[in-house]
Length: 194
Length: 194
DNA sequence: CTATTTCATTGATTTAAATCAACAGCATTT
DNA sequence: AAATGCTGTTGATTTAAATCAATGAAATAG
Picture 1 (cartoon, protein in one colour):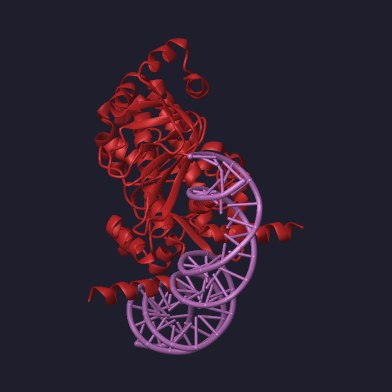
Picture 2 (cartoon, rainbow over the protein chains, first blue to last red):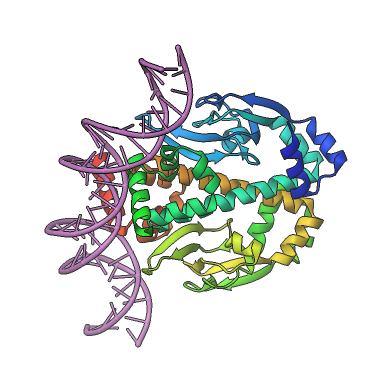
């Protein structure tokens, strides 16, 4: 239930067996069925989750009930409403399992304790957030500066596993488009290729 | 020339006078005149900069020569093409002084050395990147889920000093809009208010 | 196995934003 | 003071995407 996470700690921040034994105590295993929520709008985000298995999405709802997907998380990724998690303010997001999931959770209190007592954990977290930042920056760049077809092509190049695994209307939502528009973009690309 | 940076290190990560004396050696003061570049497309981003004074922008150019502003940086902020800085790959961005600037720079080598030798520096960096991540997430959320007028209103709320200090066509670029469209959005908001 | 959601595509129409073009106000330079 | 460049606005037109509506295919539940 912890394999992937422990392996990643080893690879990314040089955790040894003693470190792993220590850190394991702070994480809580949790299973989630498809369509269950890890977080609902209006609640405080009490946990940060590492995905051992499955896939989730973080999204907000607009006044008309439209979904806007801000993030996907698959195996090996962390997911939380980081702002709510860190500040304790209520969240405006939802986190929902798109498939049956196995997660390991940590509370804010444990997280803070580890940051203080375990420099390797702080290093791991710094590297994680840096990668998340760089990934989001790429996404933002493509949104403000590239035509739609290129944006979709890039998404396919950077995250083929996501595009394959997730329904298209969710990809559309992630790109800030309607499903119809994405469908037409795909048709255009397919035609151009031939 | 280092005042603001040192003060921020103290406040954010608990640096004491000894720490400050140590860290000062690693940073290089640098002045930049308006319109000078800290980084040009095709070069490697050799420095990460802290802004003591002035204002800069990080932007990319599309095939038609259109500018797309990914980030502003004013006093108290860091700026770099982080990806290029960390990986050593050539950058696709430009960083230009919008006003005369005073910066303090650090090289990748010094940055790595500090991360290894000075836990407080790593803490400071983790907190900085976390804040940058949260800010970008807010921006991305507003892009994919809010109508234009709300997006502009939010920008005004979150960063009034930027909106006031920077020419409107650059705000438009930052929002991914043409200057004409932003002008019309502003007119609409002004009319609605009355 | 059948019923029912969920999902993707396509067409017609409306709406929003980009583009093209002109102009006026400032600031800076010389 | 004349000239130049930068800036923001407005109008007319084109273009891109959203919306509205219908359909068919695939997946899932009963």
